[in-house]
Image (cartoon, rainbow, N blue to C red; front, side, top):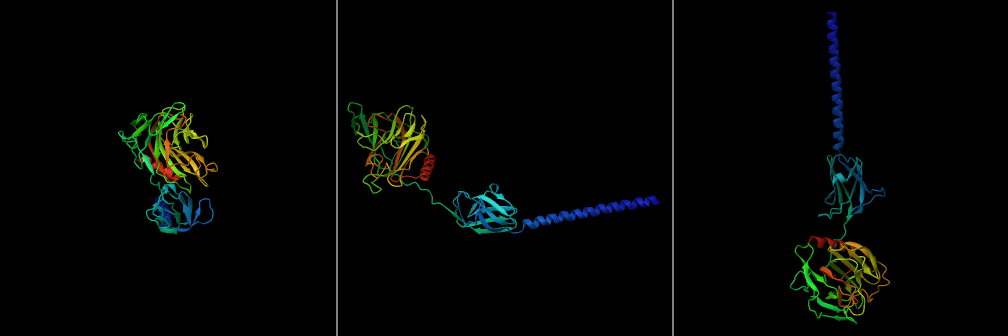
Length: 369
């Protein structure tokens, strides 16, 4: 009997110890949970904003800047917004005392000049100004030709109709404006797929258009010294010369201004040629932006990408014979035969020199039509 009593007492003691351990663990677990809840439900606080290279405190920023919020209690963050633009949380680096993210390139619907952090414990805000650039605007065209009406290839979408020209290959060569051959040398063809079912024109060698670009003399000169020209084109082969622009409207004695050389590069002997060239049998877009005189440029863009730029304008003063314009210019013709058959889907002019951002915007607009 004595042994059984001792055994029973040992079992009771063991159960008591197990129960005590369970109670202690439960208390510790509850305390841990209570601690987590205490941390997560304390309101966040933003002390200041710095550049992510840990420089001085900043109060303003630009699109694409990486910034860091310094503060405390950034636990269980639900949202971060700059003005009313929310940051994608998976793109942010969040710690208890700092948050790092990139200011998104999104124009807010409502400008509050505030950064807001919402967490489970509450909301924190701090004044912060994002310098929002002015919207990029491509101005209206001065002239435009789409070649979409196969019964009237010369019709203008904006401005005056084109006039045909013909350079007779005799000795000496003779220019006929308008062409004595009528519409010989100009054929309506299918254009690129944007917009759908549009048309284009094939301009044969020795034939050209005379165009009124619709731009008045500018930059203080007697000629047009600032302008942009856009040409959507396609070439069948390389190894020959193509001419885009001839600023001498008579097309008699002077050379053209914008060529494709035999290697496919774009430019001229005066400006030099692009480092990258055109692709055969593919519709492409050339934009040439010209601003003669002090602080000007001549920039060439192919499919929205700059392929050649002239920043030193000492050779291109106001009213320089090459690259400044008379009231009309020649498209796709050259005085001594440095031209070849070319397909053209669209030509347009502007009375300003479009900058790189405007050319990018133009490319986006054209590709969405």
